[in-house]
Amino acid sequence: MSTLRRPPVVRATDPGVTAVTAGAIVFASLAVGVALVLQTSVFSHLAWRGVGPGVVLLVVVAAGLARGAHFAMVLGFVAGLLLDLAPPADHVAGRWALALLLVGYVAGRVRQDAPAGVGGALAAVAACSFLGSSVFALTGLLLQDRAATVPDLLEVVLIGVVWDVALAAFVIPVVAWGVGRLTADEASTR
Image (cartoon, rainbow, N blue to C red; front, side):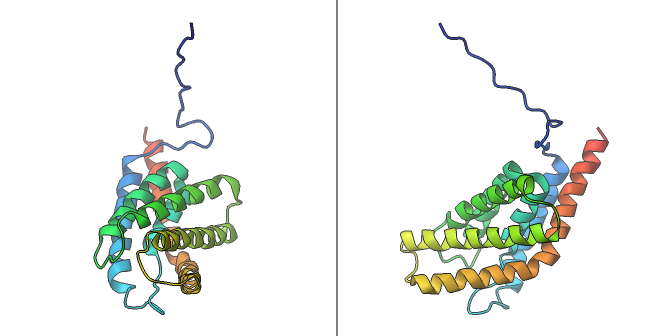
């Protein structure tokens, strides 16, 4: 007769695991809200060839770099759903949710595997931007959401990567500092 074993207990003090704090959740939620408003209102008017920066994507990348994959995946999924439903959304809902969930996972894994620093953060932003935009574009192709050719989609993805890397210097440090600072402050008060 086999016995059931309890799964091992994971503690916040274990290496690679960070506890989710209320302050980090509130700050990340506010950052997603501000990014969503900026992306759909201000930056949509600055779009080049119809492509603007993915400010929400940058918030998810920053959260992944600061907190890890689990936190960033949940944040990416919720942020993606909000982006899917925010006007002027003209696509099938769920595409950004899937894309940003994957972006959160990759950004969180980069946090564990890549060296820290500006170069590593910019490489993570470029890779995550390419991944997120590509997943969004490919799901649109599979769902026949828009009549676009593959070269058109490649151009959109590359313009998006350039936008995101250019804006990363302003978004990544602020969000990563806020999420990391709130986590450190709350952990030290316990």
